[in-house]
Length: 344
Image 1 (cartoon, helix red, strand yellow):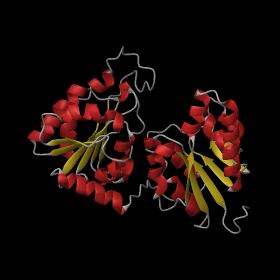
Image 2 (spheres, rainbow, N blue to C red; image 1 turned 45 degrees about the vertical axis):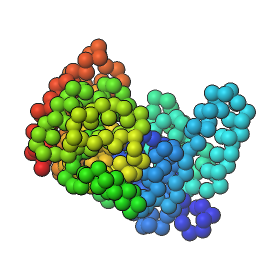
Image 3 (cartoon, rainbow, N blue to C red; image 1 turned 45 degrees about the horizontal axis):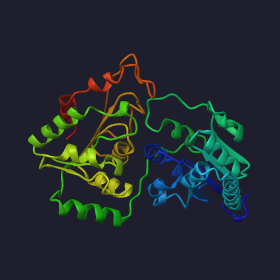
Image 4 (tube, one colour; image 1 turned 60 degrees about the horizontal axis):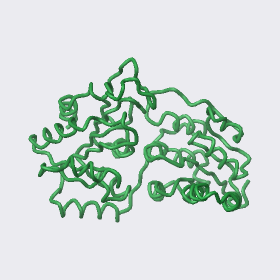
């Protein structure tokens, strides 16, 4: 038992990425229920995503992993300084005296960080990187089409309660988002699109987005484009020439973007964290999946997954279509538009 006297201390490790943090957001509540709320829960995360869990009602402490600092030391070949930084972080984790670590990432780096804590019980997944060497109990990841399946599996090791995705926002984020929308004349019933993601094979075709935006405008809808700073130029290009379409990509924080999604009439997106937020807030959501298919079953009755189940899909990181991305071409703007109409 930890020396924080009566309360056990639990650490969840899910460092990145945005979508996975969203889908792992049911873990803290499951763990709190397991310990009858008599527990302190911390979450170890990369700093760009810390805000996503900072307001979680069942997370007591957010610890940021100094990835960028360590990477900079490696790049500058300051290996002694890196070693000292590793030791400092290890001391920081050990001082918190965790009783249980749940490694929800399932990679060597996350398992190593779990081992850094010195916790007697370290639970997580087996991996090709042999991350299980640093854990005391490990499992194979489940194969399932259910949303958050691997995190539900971990939660089920501690609690039988329903797994509930949770992304709590501050009133400041809600107010900021609402004010920005009002300033642009976007008051209500707007549709959010999330066209951008990490790999080209996960993108829907640009001409398809352009056609869909036009179709949405003709149907009397206002459209908001969301994305990160790297998506700003592409989003502005998509919005140009469409008075009913506004790009807010790169202009909002992650939590402000979440606040826009919380307020939207509907959401259309590819395999990205912003699309998964539509599931959290139970918004009418059309998800366009291709080379990756994180789930086909959701807890959102107003969600539809469009996925061309080709023989080569999901190819994940190894496309065999010479850049045609046939699985994404197979999903047409008309199909997306009619699917959305069926939800509203």
